Image (cartoon, rainbow, N blue to C red; front, side, top):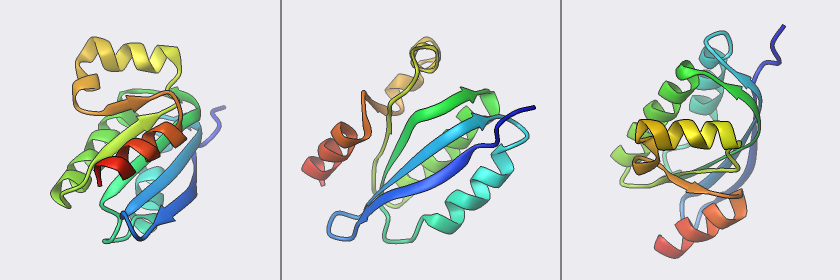
Length: 121
């Protein structure tokens, strides 16, 4: 049995429009629909920049990666940026092998990602 993915809002900075969300658990085709609904209800129109802290993500399949791309598109349409932080070595390897590391800014932790986005905003 898989551990469903859980979404937690870490912070939201109205001055920069930056929202930091943490994911924990297993992101797969079973949990992706619920995560999408949770993210859609959490993200507000003023959230132009998004940091996803994936340090608590134990598993992510292609459905999860596709979901990251969906939210990347949404954030880019808002004129913002998205960063992924705390990827496991396996997930980071997948992002580099597939070229997705060119589509997402990758950081060792959420604080570094937030600081980089805030500096650019």
